[in-house]
Image (cartoon, rainbow, N blue to C red):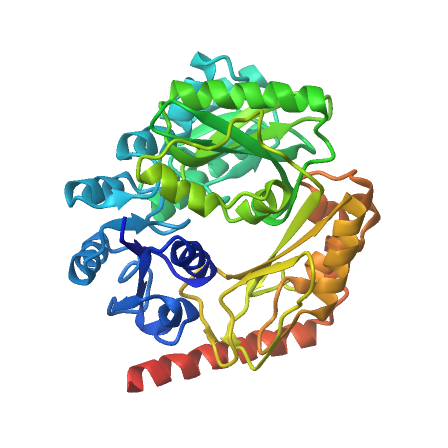
Length: 477
């Protein structure tokens, strides 16, 4: 592996570049017209333009990405997360072209990318799953029969999806048909598949995930768990490791399930197994993310491991230097996702230009960022701009340091999730560990409503004007 093309953008592209450079691997950045001045483009050894603005024209265009790899002489591809990272066709095309794909093989991506397939695999390997279907619901009559059998509330989910898209909670039978068609439509738009399945909905659960790494020699290591319950629209905002809800006995049982599932799937490279934990301490498998996760830095901070380095070494055939038992976890780490969103306007995307930027610094503070002054923030891409991570010997130390770091983080020109993250870290519910995936509904809605409507309207109007100016500037170039 001599030259690595990173089929992504933003902070994750920069993150991969840092590790690859340390390992003596050259890097290739790809970029859209909107990302001409992006930091990952400046920092890579080589860069290749993908003409266009939207993801579909650029980062999601397999043919263009493959041509970029050929033109730049890359011999390996790291997909990051999002975009093509869980696309089995892309992984297969890389293999056909003789490129090392830094991730699992296309068969594993395709099989585990279907939540219904993953549920069946979990059942086969004695991993508990939420009551529900193991295949797609094909009619409203089927949905009604299953929902009646397992009891309301139920959750409709896109079989090929993720990120909260194609998900609908149904509390009563009279709402099921409308939710079914809405979930199908959203799934088709987001994932080009209208298959949805149905499972029991747990009130007030915690979202726990396990980071795994597996090599081609049959070794599997579970690196630790992450608490990901602070979410909006089923998408994570604050993550931490370890989870205060997981004791040693529960951790051992969950780790054992993770190892069985990974081995049963013949899985290779980095992956994440997601679970729901109910109030009684029962855990249920949700899905496998066949890629590096956004929140991988908290695992790195508590283990001292470089997950991208492990990915690269496994991809080039090396054996894992660790086992589940040998991983040393110390202290506590917390991550806040810094997104371009107006948290006082139901987390509406915020667009504009970064006018002033001051990012926190200091011992045990890590910032994975793609930000620079003058950077345009558009609606074309995911709103996440940066990740702020802190580490402490105790959870309290990590929380206190995060509060200070958030206070020092200054981004002018757009709205961000910094105020929400600060509210979370100061809240009694979070600090006591007594919270669930319902945190936003239970602890933020009243705060959100305190901002005057007139101020919100001004912010929205300013964002629209900024986007218009950016479009005009790009068209002029």
